[in-house]
Amino acid sequence: MFEGHDTTAAALSFSLMLIACHKNVQDLIVAEIEAVAGDLHNKPTFNDLQQMKYLERVLKEVLKLYPSVSFISRKLGEELVTATGYKIPKDTMVHLHIYDLHHNPEFYPDPETFDPDRFLPEIAKNRYPFAYLPFSAGPRNCIGQRFAMLELKAALCGILSKYVLEPVDTPDTITVVVDVVLRTKDEIKVKFLPRF
Image (cartoon, rainbow, N blue to C red; front, side):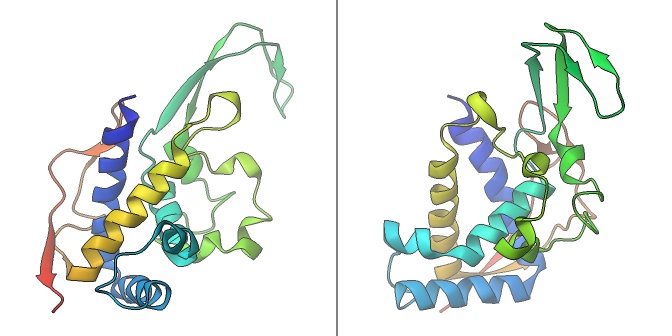
């Protein structure tokens, strides 16, 4: 299960960069940690992590912009007719480029902008259900997706409770490389300044 560490590490790297680049988002996450855990010195419990809805929206937006697995392939179990009437025969291998799907302005207005509020329930409920696939979907979706989200929340809570993040790299200065796991050409750099 290589996804257990490579994909989470990639998501954490992109999360740190984006949170560092958006001080208002960082401040809201820290405020949520304090509100839910009671104090930045308290380690959030499992239940605390589940209550952190703003942090979850931030992570969903990170995974929209930088899906750890940027493409998937599937063999069709039956013939498929597209919306335009094109027939794809059974047993054809099809490829879905999740990165492009997540950057499609038809589903996401201003898709390149970092906007965690696009995952507010009242906004997300009107979106096509398969427009967001960072963990795939259906019978072959990622069985570890809930664990991955909790792991990312726990890591970010631990970091943001102790450090203020400042950007070194930004989305404009990195080069994204499509590989088995989405990555950057060079490491992502972020400044960690002691919070206390």
